[in-house]
Length: 368
Image (cartoon, rainbow, N blue to C red; front, side, top):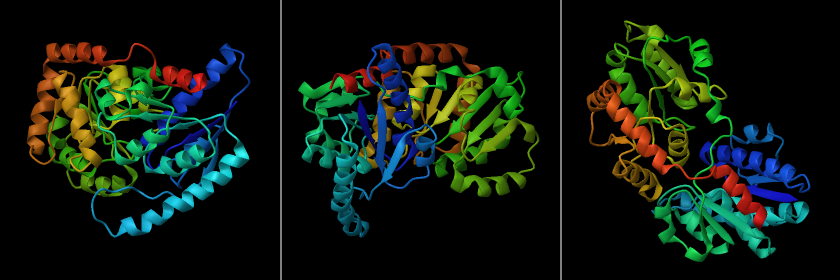
């Protein structure tokens, strides 16, 4: 069985593919289906190395970002789409897949159109409550549309829609507090706050965190994933803060295999409201504070955060309205209120899909 994967541009599209691939392999063994072969078609990205390390072949194509606003880059990017379609046609003819699984985003548009031309069935997955333009286009060519939230169903042909939840990294549930304490060199006697802004970091979250850091480490310890492009600047700023308890703050550009342990140790999580981060928060039932990206495409992060807030499973900080001190106040409130933490965990349990999302997605792909 040959399965073509597509998606990319950021870790948000690529990392969840690994969980689905893992489940596809398991199902093939359980059902005695021939060993699956995988090929990923995607634009050039720093995250492609992670895919290749998992034994998945990668082919690089051109893909133009789809924007609904005026930008001179639109004229350049629009030319990349037909080039990407021609490249995809070549790779699909070579690979001859039985099915295409699209994780969505602009990177998936050329391969999906090429697959449609060659009459290869397409299964696509929408992570957010409000789909982007690329995924609305892709849905037109798809045989099945898998969604993370029931609220997204209204945007698609209901006859094609299946609610699966959002896939997460297969190892994220296997974290160890003991390993975290050793790796991050932190104390078992203080609560830990995990701060991250997705795979690429988040400038605004970093700025807010640094401004209140001296106050935060009076009462807790911090594990902070800041993103590669922000790491050196943050290190320089930290050196000038003369922190009273510098050993309570650990900053990294990107946390890889130890992320599961960071989650296990964290009492609360501060995060953007991207679908993958939310899926992990739901799966691990972590009390959380969301700071949605105000400029996200189609307003999808604020919409995701609004949905979680309405379900009483998240607290929200608005990056354009709330101050860093507002964030500190919410952190201290959540840390001190064990009843609120318990309530959030219960509400997060209600949001979790009844079946492992990666498993459900894998089953839908195989059913095609």
